[in-house]
Amino acid sequence: MDKSQKILVVGLGLIGGSYAQALSDQGYEVGAVTKEESDLQFALQRGMIRHGRTRPDADYVGDFDLVVFALYPHVFLQWLRDHQHLLKPGALLTDVTGVKVPVVYPAQQMLRPDVEFIAAHPMAGRESSGVVNAAKEIFTDANYIVVPTAANSQAAIERCMDFGRTLGFKRICTLSPEEHDEMIAFLSQLTHCIAISLMTCHDSPRLKDYTGDSFRDLTRIAKINETMWSELFLANKEELLRQMDIFIDRFMTLRNNLQAENVPEIEKMMRLSTANRTYFDQ
Amino acid sequence: MDKSQKILVVGLGLIGGSYAQALSDQGYEVGAVTKEESDLQFALQRGMIRHGRTRPDADYVGDFDLVVFALYPHVFLQWLRDHQHLLKPGALLTDVTGVKVPVVYPAQQMLRPDVEFIAAHPMAGRESSGVVNAAKEIFTDANYIVVPTAANSQAAIERCMDFGRTLGFKRICTLSPEEHDEMIAFLSQLTHCIAISLMTCHDSPRLKDYTGDSFRDLTRIAKINETMWSELFLANKEELLRQMDIFIDRFMTLRNNLQAENVPEIEKMMRLSTANRTYFDQ
Image (tube, rainbow over all chains, first blue to last red; front, side, top):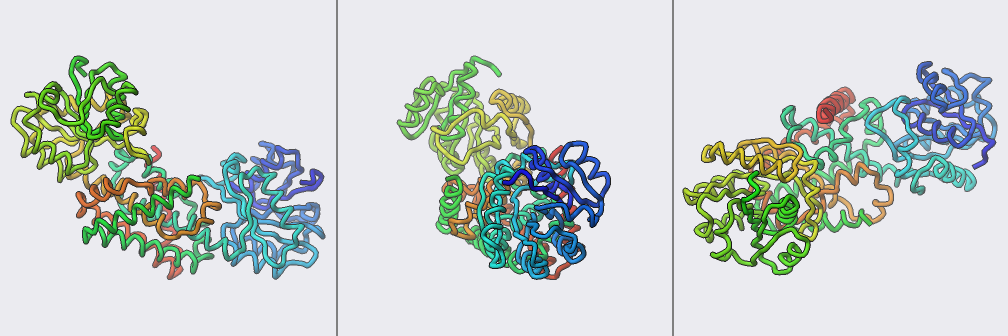
C-alpha cells in the first residue's frame, strides 16, 4: 500500500481504534473524526492517530486519500448524506459494517461520481466495545471480507484487499453483498441469537460453579452491545429469520427424535454433525 | 489418599485411561480390566497401569481397594449384576458416568452390603475418544462432582472428594443425583444438542472459509461419540426435554421479537444475557 496516502478513520470505537493503531504502527499518517473528545484524546495519547477532530470539518476531511467508516449502519449512511461534499476528489471510501445489502447499495447510489466506496467486513471483535479496548491483535487470526458490487472498479477491489493485508488479517476473500449477508446471518448472527437465548434460560447463580469450558465457549458472545447488534439484526431481518427457522427445524427434529427414543435417527444426526465439524478443522 | 491402596480401573477409554495415568504418575498401583487386548497393551507400554486383564477374573478383581468404573451406564450396571461377587469386601466403588439418577439408585440398590458405591462425575473430556487420546491434563481446569445419596457414608464422601483432588481437578463439589441431572441437562447436554443442530443446518463446504472463532467455539462439541451421547441423552430424557423446551421458548421469543421489529424487547434480552454472562466471568 502507498505509504504516502493519508488515512481518515471516522468513528473511534473498538474497530476504528484498532484500524488506527494497526495503520499508525506501520507509519501511515492516520487522522480521525469522532464524536467524543475523550476518545480523541485517548487515541492521540496512545499514538493511534496523529491528529483528529470531533466534527467533520471542511478544512480537515478533504485532506484524506482513504476514508474508513467505522460507524453504525444508519449513522454511516447519514454521514454520507450530510458530509460527502467534503471528501477529497478521487478518495477511496470503505467501511466495517456487519451487514451489507442495506448499506452498500444505498451508499453507492447516493455517492458523488468522483469518489468510490468499496465495502468490507473485518470479521473481528471483542466482548467489550470502545476505543479503550482497541487492539490490532484482534485481526491476526481473523477474516477480512471485501464486498464489491458491479459499481466497483477492479483497482478499488485490489486496493481494498491490499488494505486488509496491511491491517494484518489472516485471510482475505471477496463475497457479493447477498452472499455476505446470508453467510453472516448463519455464522455470526444466528450464533449470537443462540448464545443470548441460552444465557436467558435460567438465573441460577449456582450454575457457574459447575460450568465447564464448552458452555463458557458457547456463551462468550452472549455479552453483547445491544444497540449495535439489534440494529444489525434488523438490517438483516429476512435472512436472519430464515437461518433461525432452519436451526429451529433441526433442533426440533433432534428434540422429537429424543422424545420418541428414535436412537438410529439421533445417532445419524450426530454422525453428520461430527463429519461436518471435522471438515472445519482442516 | 492412602498410597498403599490398590486401584482398579474398569474400562480403559479416554476417561479411564486419563484416571490411570494421573494415579500411576503419583505412584499408586493401578490395574485395569478392559475388553480390548490392544488397549491394555497401550496402557502398559505408556506406564498408565502396572497390570491388567481383558476379563474380570476372580483371582484379579478381588485384589483392589478402590474400583473406578469408566463404562457406559448400561454396561456398568450389567457389570455389577454379573461380577460384584468378585469385589474385595470393604472395597469402595466409584464411576465417571455423565447421568446419575438412572445409574446411582439401581447400582446402590443391587450392591452387596459390604462394599460401597459413591457416584462422581468428572466434567472433563475431549473431542476424540479412546485410551490413545487419554491425558491427565484434561482434569487440570475441570470440575469434579461427587454425587452422594442417603445410602452413602460420610467417610466415603470424603474419600471420593479426596480422590478428585488426587486426580488433579480444579474444583470439587457435591450435588444430589437429581440436582446433577438437571444441571448437566442444561450446561452440557443442551449445548451439545445446539451444536449438533447447528452443524447439520447446511452442508456448504464454502462456509469454513468465512468461519470466525466464535462459530468454531460454539460447534467444537458437535464432534461427538454418537453411541455414548445418545445413551446419555436417553438416560436423562425427561430433564433434557425440559431444558430443550425452555431454550426453544427463549429462542422463539427472540425470533418473534425480531419479526415484529420489537427493538426494546430485543435490547432488553441482550442486556439480560450480557449481565448473566458477566457473572460467569467472576
